[in-house]
Length: 350
Image (cartoon, rainbow, N blue to C red; front, side, top):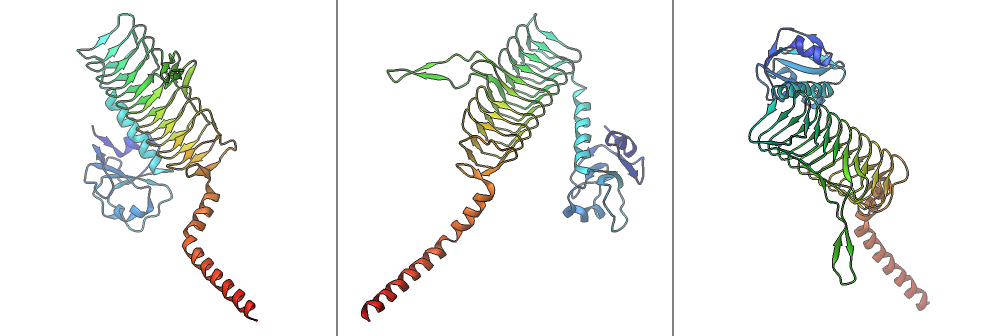
């Protein structure tokens, strides 16, 4: 597919500076781009490549002041990075539109309802009473259990598994290998030391515009719902336990684990490899640094914590600064002890 600068400008609301008929058919990084490719410049440290790149079109910020003439056509926008993301989304949608119909072999229950322009990839299973909205793309090797509801314009990448009774909103994207609705980790200890499984009869609800990375596991609730609210973004390799609730537009980085019944607020940012215990609350706007272990509720909005157990970020930095000086402090303390002994010895000799 080939697009001109003027066509791209319409998609990203940009201003063309240069040849409006300049055409591109692929994307590249600005330092590696060649003729017929589009790049973007958002980070000032890459600005020198603007004058040497072979790209035909470059998206730049309105505020950029040129140091010399450039050969590519420029598309000026308020935020080049955001505009580039918008363009890539449009490109992906165009590619997805070419997919339609049910590939064979696949199994689609006679009681399932598929909306308009749905694509079902080969080796996919769709169970009884499933409802799939319009423009949904279900890639090969997916499993969709009985009574699942999937909204409009969703994308399930290869190997996604959605257990029975789970609900997806509109514009949900789930990447390869993720499992929604597996049993929560519920076992009742018995007097003889064994464990009795507690049936997990709830479900998982994923609201609109959520994106979930590859190989995540989001467990169904014991009762009620595990809920991922609107606009939340989950990275790869994340474990969300039963009855957890994740607020709107919260982002969670890879390898994070959230224990059961914890409630995470809106617009929270959680770094990679963080661990969060169960039955606590995380206030709106909180930030949890990578590898932090959160063992108690964060009740104050916009809290920033780090470490394990997680503690106030600023206080932790002070503690770390003191910790680094401990060897020198130990040396000075030994010198003071020696001086005190000498003074006491002198006093006794008088």
